[in-house]
Amino acid sequence: MSAGHRLGPPLGGPAQELVDSGFHLENADAPLLHAGLNRADLAHVLDLRARGVVPEEPARRLLGLLLEADRTTPEEFPYDPAFGEPYNSRERHFISRIGDDAGWLHAGRPRREAVRIALRLHLRTQVVDLIEAGAALAETLAETAAEHSRTWMPDQTYLQHAQPSTFGHYLLSFAYPVLRDVRRLVDALAWINSSPGGAGCVNGSRLLDDRGPVAQMLGFDSVIEHTRDAMWQTDGLVDVLAVAASLVSTQSKLAEDLEIWASSEFDYVTLSDGYSRSSVLMPQKRNPYALSIIRGASGTLIGRVTGFLAVVKSPSARSDNLIYAYGEVPRALDLALRTTRLTNGVARTLQVNTARMWSALEAGYCQATDLAEYVMQTCDVDYRTAYQVVGIAVRRANAAGLRGIDLDGAMLDDAAREYTGRPIGLTGRDLVEILDPRHIVATRTAAGGAAPPVVEGMATSCREQARELRDLALARREGFQAADRCLLETAEAFASGADQEDSR
Image (cartoon, rainbow, N blue to C red; front, side, top):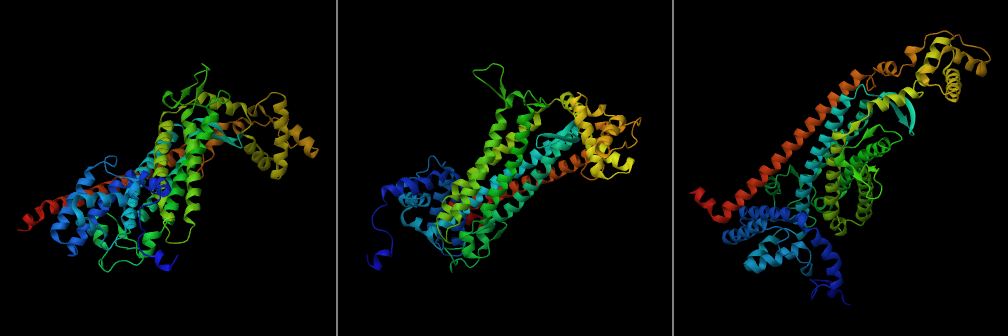
């Protein structure tokens, strides 16, 4: 084949295999991009007309047709993989309606630019929704934590009793990472809400010496500075996927714990009926079905992050960097949104068995660490020695069917004799307060501790932060909606000729 055969548009139609794979894939994503494509086209035509690039009458006809397309649902619009990707389907439809006037859409802009803009318009709405949902989850966790600042329980590591704590303190350990991920989403929104408009293919267009008007009409905060970067960057998409995966992985950790705690063996919590399912075979079973959805969503999002990274490692300025983004990223964010709302519902309606939590705490040995510290400070021994003495006493108490609160000074002296060969002078000492789990929790007054007033203060702070983030999301949504209304009203006025009447 001569070099000339590699230049110019391909002759003939696309191979059926290409239609069934690539074009089918892209058209399947058209409903996600439809509204954004319409708005990208409207802003482009308005900008071209303002510069005098497009004559007035073709601009009116084209704007009228684009507004009609905007009023058409994606399902009704004639997207067809037989004609190529969604942009090609749109072009074919527009040409069939207004002939060569549709060709003005190409002036100063490749097809991919409109799709890049459409993706960002769609994603920014999704991210705002996810910010709001994440903030709502953090607020629910904080409010529930405050309610349970005195719900005593044995905190656990490795699913083993660790130290006395409260259910409220436990819940806040999820509110904080949720808030951090929501703030990361705010940062991701700043990246998403930058305009690639006017970037051309790689180095811009001499027709568009100012990229600001398109950005302003579409409600973008800024333009992406470097034109080649504007068209082909993917790092921000990786970032928003990773944050979504992180947000849901935090929820998955909570779901893992709650599934264990909802079992008959623990009986710490019960999911409300609306988040549970029954077995069709075993009448006694009550399955925490919602928790399986949360855990599965986390695994799915992890897979989507890694899958997208595998795609975007290709050389720069290649279509595969973004072809798969149009569907994968929006669907991942949709899954994260639905899951976050589900987790919020689970947390909001969760039934907590406070008596069972206290019973488990009272029956165990969570006070062992504080007892060892008491032995160290009272008996003038190093912590390792105190640790071994208390460990021996706990082992003996457990074998005898005694609880941690049943330990006494004589038992500790016996343990000391075994380890050091001599007693440590605790026989007859009153250890009731030292062994009381509630007293132990009350001593945790340092920043971040489990003492009820500290937990209540942290819960208030988390609730305030969550509400600020929710308000930010609401403000951003209102701003985007206002820009959208203004764009449509401007296009309607120009298409109908009302702009000329207003100028007279």
